[in-house]
Image (cartoon, rainbow, N blue to C red; front, side, top):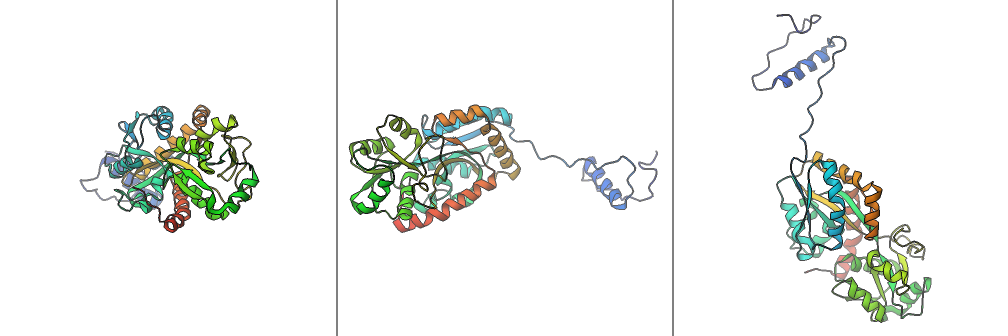
Length: 348
């Protein structure tokens, strides 16, 4: 039998019985490369690629009922995401406990094919407001990608006579005589307003309601003077000139409400806050699979048609890397923790 390489005199020890043929050839090639004895044109065999993922349908858990805003976001992205991943991505609604039933199920999943679409609060401050929560977002979940973001809209009651910059001066002067509505303690609309109060020196009192539609009715009737609202519910009233939109909480203006300035433009410097949804995975999902899913989400969200569909629902497509989402989570925790601790905010 002719030798494998005529030009070499190096002796190779027999490999143990365990490694495969491909593994033995890789070791032999490495030894020859180290000795500088590879023949012309020879190259090292490629490193084995990681296991393919996904290998079966992926479950995307949503902790809210069908027809809700997060459910709509999920259903906009799952079909194109299925195409990119090469496996079906199926929305599974698991409402309950403000979305934490689904988040807990994701945290405990061990099948490598279950992830969740969650509001930012589930990944940031949920444990601070609900210590007995069945999962810890910092240890049981890992970030994959942001999916959708939206500024909140500072709205005032049309019963007020002040508009624009005068609103900011009026609420500061009014002290506790003014009230603001929100859909409950611990929601982004409540936490965002408490952050704004601290930044602007306001003292408006909190009045909780069952949901944002009830908050809007309270504003229209003059029962409360202020509220932070989602663009999806604000735009119809704003376009009909029924609900004044004073400013956006985002760092820059938004195409969702063209012409509405930011709070920074109104004089509240250094303030920005967004409502957002992101995909998270169980801590045990392999990093290569997390990266593949994040890249697939990014590809989907770069599609103009998908961006338009999200825009129509009041959202901006906002993909990210896992590392960028981790930084967003850390930033929100740093900013919201003092508010939660100062106000002793707890959720049921």
